[in-house]
Image 1 (cartoon, rainbow, N blue to C red):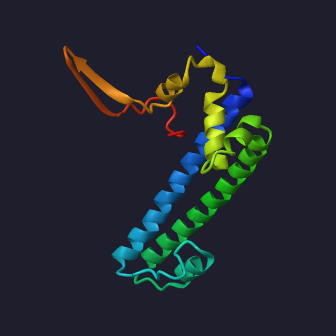
Image 2 (cartoon, rainbow, N blue to C red):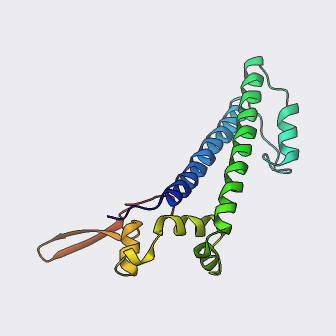
Length: 167
């Protein structure tokens, strides 16, 4: 069994942490949208709700009740705090990615950005530990599930085993 080095484990933890912080921020943003919908307010399409102009519109918006205004303020503070946390994590990830030759090589593939490249590089770690390319697909859960009995062979959806952050 492969045990990655401490710095690789830390890198993986940071990648996973970023995903969790972004998920929290998304939940907070969805709560703001729910609050607006419950108050009967239709947000403007221009500027976008999460741009500087959209956030300013949200802050100035007069909601019907004091509790709705308080909830809006708390949710906006949460979104701003989570955005700051995401930036801090991404700064650290950018530093780590800049030191990794694997990330540089993966970024040469069209459509592969820094976040995808670092996730693949961190979770593959040592590519020589895999027997072949199919083993990498199995590790990330990108192969179809198989239900085989007698002469019947059914392939289902991907197995989704392994680190979800890479999928």
